[in-house]
Length: 66
Image 1 (cartoon, helix red, strand yellow):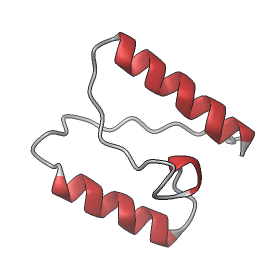
Image 2: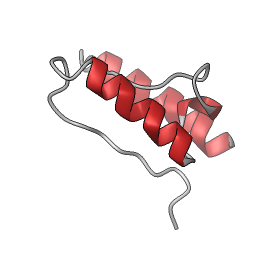
Image 3: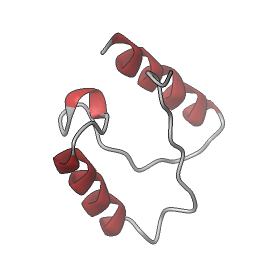
Image 4: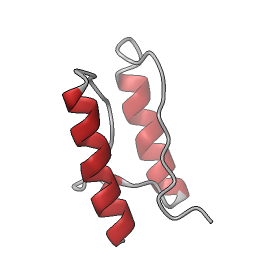
């Protein structure tokens, strides 16, 4: 959980510094705004569909990979 939380803060900070907008689940939507379950993935898919005209690409981070 610590890696998800701190990684999210760091990635969001860098994106903001670079002037990049983002569409992402928040901590109020899922644990730390991360996607861990099929239900979380469905929430994310619905959010992306709602904002499809604003999205140019997708950035995936894997804070606990390995």
